[in-house]
Image 1 (cartoon, rainbow, N blue to C red):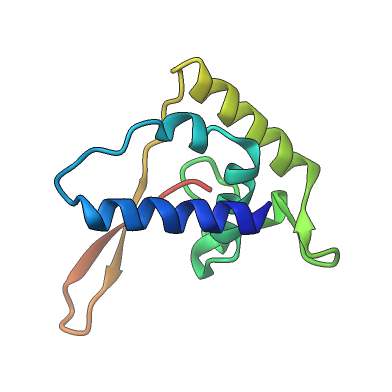
Image 2 (image 1 turned 30 degrees about the horizontal axis):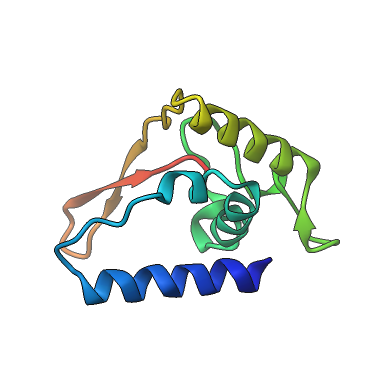
Length: 116
């Protein structure tokens, strides 16, 4: 399935490159597929920032089993929940947690920390 997703992404990128001013229709049903969501979650969970919780307090250990190197059932449940809400046009992303980190010059830089 990952190969199919990767190929579809390449096909869409090529289509966009050949027609940069055009619109690509039919994307919504594609992104609502659970396998696409699972691959996206896999990539997000393996980002360095996945150890930092957003406003919901959730970090990657809730969704990822490091010993088994696989998504937990809680991840699959979350994916199904998101897909259902997308299909019903009810999905609302959670707000980003704002925090500030010090810069080398002593000033503070704002950063946004999204939820997983």
